[in-house]
Amino acid sequence: MQADLLNEEERIREAITPKSWNEIMTSDSWAVFKIMAELVEGFEKMGRIGPCVTIFGSARTKSNHKYYKLAEEIAYLLTKKGFGIISGGGPGIMEAANKGAHFGGGKSVGLNIDLPWEQSANPFIDSDKLITFDFFFVRKVMFMKYSQGYIVLPGGFGTLDELFEAITLIQTHKSVRFPIVLVSKEYWGGLYDWILQRLLEENNVSPEDMEIFSIVDTAEEAIEIIETYYNKYALKPNF
Image 1 (spheres, rainbow, N blue to C red):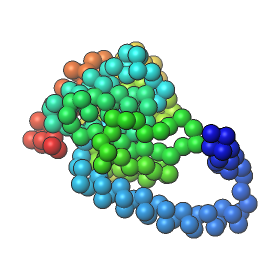
Image 2 (image 1 turned 60 degrees about the horizontal axis):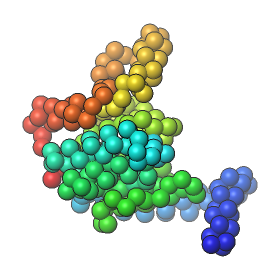
Image 3 (image 1 turned 60 degrees about the vertical axis):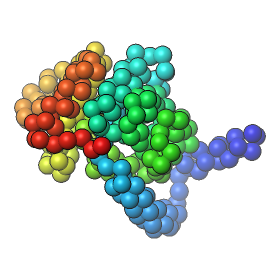
């Protein structure tokens, strides 16, 4: 136990200690091979699994919280409609998403990230559908490439990062259009108002950009948006 704690402390210390330029250059060269390996593994595994709906949210949300229960319900209902579920693989909202998919009898995928603190894979991911990444940006590639939709529940900086990444790629036509649904007007309403009052009024975004995402309050509303989108284009979920 003591040895594990010392190893963990060493990992954290190494991660935050500034490196010399020569160390950075050497590390970068080797990182290329690691990045390639993660991309290849991700493409091979996700190619077999197929597209799913991704559910985002805070890793810190407890299992008795209303948002945890809401994420679990959304995932469960989506699996009953034929959609698989992808999460970031960790605890909190991610665990709730995988839990709902697991008990709904659908595909439960976890794209975990190796961090020196906070995150470990949750137990509701299918044993053959867990992938662990060192690089956040490689993990993002998998989210974007294999998502039929984003369901975004309340979360922190990581959730905002994934949300705005998806909006930007759709806005700039670097990604195919898919539904992005923010859940909880109470939580996201202030951000939406700020975007309207600052970004839109100052012409930093266009009115049509506001149509890239929707905000709802209930599981049923979230499911309806996903279903309506795919019915409109005569597409079916990936069973």
